[in-house]
Amino acid sequence: MSARRRIAAALLAGAAAFDSAAQSCDGPGKRVESDRYVVAYRTLPAKIAVGEHFAVEAVVCAKGASPAVEGLRIDAQMPEHRHGMNYRATVTARGAGRYVAEGLLFHMPGHWQVLFDVEARGRTERLTTDLVLE
Amino acid sequence: MTAARVAAGAAAALSIAATPAFAAEPVSFTPAETALILRHGPWPQPVLRDPSNRVSGSAAAIALGQRLFFDARLSANGAVACASCHVPASAWTDGRKQAVGLVPLDRNAPSILNAGLLRWFSWDGGADSLWAQALRALLDPREMGATAALAAGVLRSDAALRCGYWAVFGGGAAGDERMLVDAAKAIAAFVETRTSGRTPFDVFRDALASGDREAAARYPVAAQRGLKLFVGKGNCGVCHFGAGFTNGEFHDVGVPFMVAPGRVDPGRHGGIKRLAADPYNLLGAHSDDPSRASATKTRHVELQHANFGQFKTPSLRNVALTAPYMHDGRLATLRDVVRHYSELDLERLHTHGEQLLRPLKLSARETDDLVAFLESLTAPDATAAPGAPGPVAGCGP
Image (cartoon, rainbow over all chains, first blue to last red; front, side, top):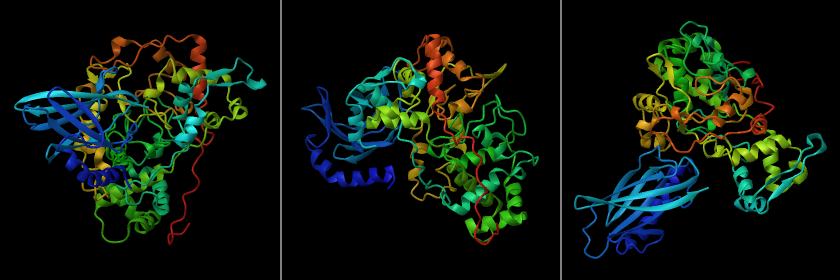
């Protein structure tokens, strides 16, 4: 099975779990949060490999009285190298705060920052998380 | 290689004593260095069937493709074949600074060895499959200058090729363009089989993984020191990543991209633009992958200003056999390449370039050691001529 098909199968299998997670952002995977938003996410496949495309499944929740989330963009960069990915992720809204980004690829080992740009009421708030790819 | 084996191999620093033939101070590798070394293998890697090419892996297509690869009738002047620039005895390159097709070209001819493992093709990645790359060379008016009519004419007029074509692609009245694309897919099927075997480095790497000190000690000490530099001070494995010693992507390494006064080679920037306009890319009608899953890279690749002057990271396997070096062949020897990185001129890096490269400031011995390591990436079979193409059932010998 190709990597893309494996990702598609995993997306289908995980959709139900993420549906319930969307209510609270307490679902499986990792969390990154600011004062106003929480992003719960996981990568598909779970283990990212250098030079292999992967997807990100994310749920975005507004905290307290923060404006409702209207959109999400996902990107990544290597801050020490001063470059990003060579590929632009396509983010699809799945409703209930769920998003799926496809087409990401890390082309180098090392320190990467995943960037979640949460869009709400005409403003964008960036949440970042770090990972080291070996 | 399982994760457990990697972990076991990396569990302790290894000090590899040299055999008397390579008497010198032993080289020790820390667990971190060992882990970095192990990710350059195992070798060989399997070349997977290309889903965009329905004859990928077909013995009959490989045989037909081999005949076409060496057939100069596919060029406008009848004198240029794929093999003109990809010469088996020269590790499937041509030894020239810059390749010569119908006219002199701007870039060095890359080896096709292990090309089936790559993501993008050509120095600029302007093709996203081996068959699209074959079409690019066939159709480029400066390379082979073929047309669909010319290629189809050769396939129809030569009895052996005609029989081979029918055996591989079936009968029916295929049009010229269909026959041209099919010819490129057969050539790609042949190119996929051009892989190089194990090298002294691979033997050392596997010995390191298994803790076989006796086998590891047979690897020249100078190459061991060079390897230590490669994964350490040089940080070369960030781009020359993995078993193929390439991350398959594109970088500006400070090589000038001025071709002639007033004319530049845009590198990856031009490659992505070419790819987007290519009717033979993986998103197009000629791909045999109905799901288009193999086109993920093509769908998502992004044109960026920083792509200007970037060129593909070449594999280092068999690099000692593929001089001269860099995208335009400007560096004659491996020593020149190492010196380039040792004395890197940061002023030549693109203003939007990566902050990864720094002059390595290598000593003379360090330069020798890195060259010794690079020479250890040579496979004995890299210059072997292919056997005669296999017979195609019903087409005679």
